[in-house]
Image: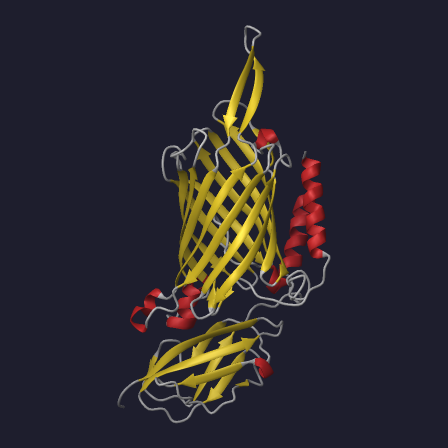
Length: 314
Length: 122
């Protein structure tokens, strides 16, 4: 299973890196720089690498530790492909600890609208979680999951002068369908009497949505008012991310789960660092606060003449 | 130990000097972004985070009705390739907008604007 995962990841990565290319730009709409958020997907297409994204949280059915990586590559200036994977350590409340790779996920994203004046971005994406590429005991499903999505980003730089202190605010968000290709998993076991028992685990369709609200101190410094902030502080972007899953059917309708994720991003020239608390919104999601951290590299700035450019500049 | 070595090599590759350039973002300006100055400045200077290409970089200053008040074109400081500057016509009291659009040496384009105010009276 792991070898299939690695082979697929390696082949896709090599295919993406092997091509020369011509153009540039990352997370920008006019003068707005959108950082890469830690919890929800970004609305923009870019050449970037998140490695690692670390998550640790105690959930109702056990403790989860995850180390994830995500490589985004522009094929055309506004069309990009993202390859993502994770390694999970599951420590269930009842049962033995398991670890292994999750399923490989690929997402094609098209940024079809960008307004420099209004600092706005719109994009559509289609994600494919390849079932069976990860380890089942580590939580990877054996079936494919499709994820069509609409994503947006909006900076508040077009607010009137009287509201200039609000201009550093920005919001990004996602509205996504999570569509499993199998409605349920059947598990066959023999009970103590030797009779065959069939257990069916339902896989609901899920309406996933989320947004991030951020206040950019770099934007404040560069475009609104030079506050004389010291060197590290002037690169900080405090934010709150909301991430919600609404199951729609198969016995799970109404069983909403989600997290509120307050945190901070430091954005440098070539990479950014992010740290967030992961706060469950209800007991179904959990009772304990987790933590998420990320190192994110801007490949277009690190390697502007090679892998930091679109494959084709059409 | 082997994984530590691999991590160090990756870090060196990604962060190493000589392979990377960034977008040119505004680092500071004179007059300062959003400031009020008592005496009218004779020029605007903008410091960027990266060296910029003079031929493809602009810096303009306009008054409240949108008329140019600079004596452009802007030029890159000969001693500092990350500084763009433009001389100004004599300015009266009022609010002025500085608009810039630059091309960094690795061909990334960035743009932005900010205001400063020249105070009334002495």
